[in-house]
Image (cartoon, rainbow, N blue to C red; front, side, top):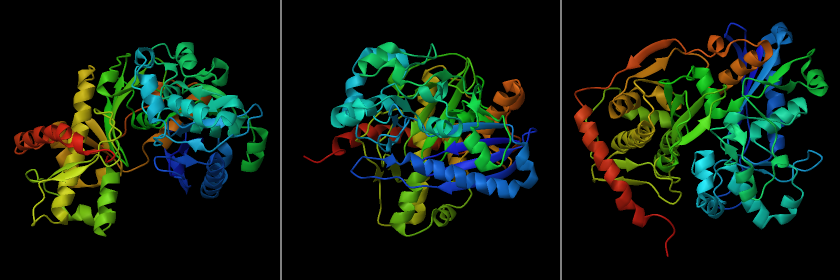
Length: 487
């Protein structure tokens, strides 16, 4: 048996997988995010440990005697978070999360130095780790003076599991401290952001062994060792392992809280000016690129709250049949946008509202606007040389037949729907745990799912949605002067 642990923003998901890839048990535990000031987003790392312990207790109860066959553990987690440890391994302050924007000024200052884009292959976004530490150095100097190590969220969980300090290439790629092409910490970038190499954990490939479960965890979990713990991967890298997207031409689109369009790459091909993320994959000598939009199902949740309807009720209003594009255009910039605009201050809008516009029309416009934003990401990925001829469709929004038909037609690509079953980051983490524990060839374990059916672009509406997309693109520069803080 192999355990995959995915440390998300709102909860931890645990999957117990047999050696043949069959998922035997699943458990989830939630925790809170604190927002003490506008733009701040923090978590107590201790809440992750409590959630992990509770999730494992659930799995043990569900798995029964098969729990004793556990041989490996893999990890996945939210990227960019900053867990600060002192010389004794104690946490110095709450973890600053990926969606925290307090370090916007520090990010802009680092990004103005051409070495950061040249070596890291990415824009320095406010949510990345390096600007967070620059903010701490400036605003919390006492904390910064005691800093011995910086860990990413899943790596703090591994520290608790094993007592070992380490990170993997895919997670480290989101710090702005990694030379992503060379897959090594950059002393140049560390020095320029006020950090030292000895404050970084050792680097490993995601499928490598990163220690064994400690005696304390073995005792708590009723196990006999040794049990290997893999280095694991960042959430989207692990999700790509869960969906088998590891080679050139493979990719997925995720309609989750945020929207992701990911392409696996066999070579390093950064294009930071596009606001596409270029990161190391969780497997050796592979990379991936992704466009990210900040509001996908999160936009539907916002409309749901505003209208006093559940997301499911709003989705039902659209029906399943594809219709001509709505005369209302939605720009889903509710929390700013990453790809392709890299704009933390832009805000969303409905354009073209009519007195007859109802909740069904608003929902159709919203789903179309998210699809148009993901089309922006597809165009940005294509500009780097990524060649995608079809995509897996995953995430909660993929349960909407209408949304999938809109998305396929807007992207003009077939969308493959996996058969019902566990997918994504927790499964990818379990697969990495299996490889680390057994030495199995990654290509034998990291395989695509069986496809239940495919959603094809509708040629009857392709031209109309193309025209609607071009109108959508023209609205960003028109909206920009009216976003941000009022004078």
